[in-house]
Image (cartoon, rainbow, N blue to C red; front, side, top):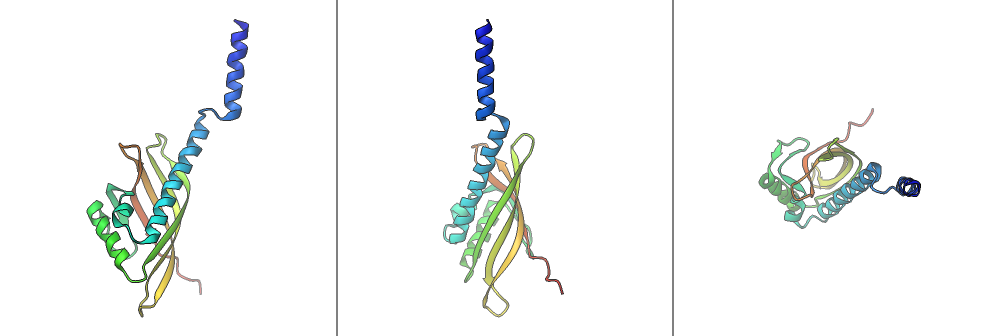
Amino acid sequence: MFPMRILAASSLVFCVLMGCGSPNSDLLAEQQKLLQRDSEWANLASEGKDVDRTASYWSDDAIIVAPSQPVIEGKAAIRKFVAESFATPNFHIHWKSEKVAFSPDRKLAYMTSTTQTTVPGPNGVPMTVSGRGITIWRREADGQWRCTVDIWNDPPPASP
């Protein structure tokens, strides 16, 4: 009986020290997985070529709230928005997300981001605008994380 207790205690100590299945190691791994998925999405969007693959990162019922535009709802409207964006001369977008926060059941998560978008300026010359964003992600039935809410804003006005 005594050797079994020593074996059990040794196993517990080993798992604590090595992070065997601990909630914190699982959480960190899931955070990294979601950040990696978002980074792949940002790189794909930055290429500005594959509308369908880029749109696939949003859920079917997703909404986009972009500055100075009506709310874009659903996959068909999002696909159209992406296609029009990619077709815009000199359009380019890239973002970097950070600080993943999960719901207690880990079925939802949100991240904040910084965004750089290049679009035609008022005189047709390309201008790059920096912004901030927040995305809400949901783990779908297939186990994949997809963005359900995508909101970004223009930069704050310059100080006088």
